Length: 390
Image: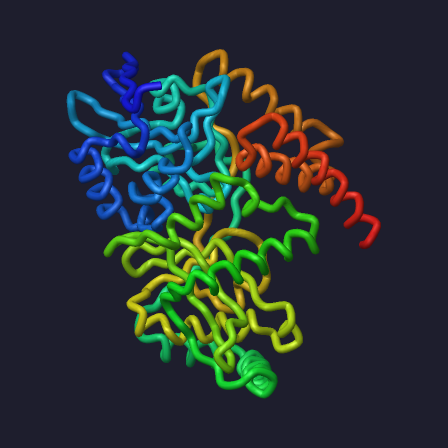
C-alpha cells in the first residue's frame, strides 16, 4: 500500500485525502497545529499531530483524513482503518481523548466526514466534540478528570487541603510511613533512567496478572509505542515519566504523553513491596507539588468513574462514547451490530456491558484473529474468576 492515498467525495464539495500520519505534507502538519492551538478543547497531547505520527510509526493501518473544501483545509480525522470500513480512534485504546479536529466555522458533520473518507463507522470512546459534530452518535458520557493550575502548585495543594483536613492528615501519615520504611522521598519529574522505566512496566504487567486484565504491554505495537515515546522526545512532544523515589529506590511512577505544559499519563504503578504505605497517594500529591517547577499547567488523569481521581482534580470535563456511522452499507451494518447490544435483557446486564467493553478493548489492541481469540478466551475466564471471588 502506498504511503499516500487520494480519495475524493462529492459531498457538498467536501474532499478527503487519506494519508498515513508519517506522510503528512508539511503544510498539513502546520494546519493541524494551527487548528489545535485555536481551540482550547483540542489542547490535549493525544489530539495533536505528533501523537498521530508516533502511533503511525508502529501501526501501518494508521490514517489521517485531511478534509478540504474549495482547496481550503478545514479538518483532520486520525484513525485506524480496519476491515469493512470500520474505524477506531488513532492509538486506541490509549487515546483517552479523540476528536474530529476542525475549524469552528467548518460545519463538518460526522456522517459527512466518514462518508467522504469512505468509512462506514467510527467507534467513539473518549470523544471531545466542542462543535457538536457527532450529535446523537454519542450515547453515553463520562467525566474527564484534570488537575489544572490557575496559580502555583503550592496554592493548589493549599486549596486541596482546605477542602479536606482528613486528606492532609492521611497524606502526612502515608509520607511519614514511607520515609520510615525506605528513606527520604524525592520526585524526578522527567525520569530518563531506562531501568526505572522497565521497573514501571514490570509492576504494571504484574498488576494485569493479579487483576486478570488484558496485558496491553504484551502487544508488540503498544510496547513499541511506549518505549519509542520514552526514548524519543522533542522540545514540544514526547513521553514523560514522573517518578517517586524513597531512599534512592523507585517506589511509584506515572508514564505518558506530554505536549507543552500538558501531561497525560497512561501507566501508573508502584512497587507492591511498599503497598502498605499508599505510595500511589504520596506520588500523586508530590507530583502536583512539582508541577510548577516542571512547567506543567495540566495533569490529566483521563476519563472514568474512578473515585480516587476526583479527590485530586479540580477540572472535570466530559467525554462521549458511542458509534458514529456514515449513510452507506458499511454504516448500516455497523449500526445493526451495535443495536444488538442494546436489546433487552443485554442492555440491563451490568456483566454483559463490562464484558463487551473489555472485548472492544481487546479488538483495538490485538491486530490478528488469533490474538483476539486468545484475548477473548482469557477475558471470559478471568471475568468468571472475579465473579466467584466477589
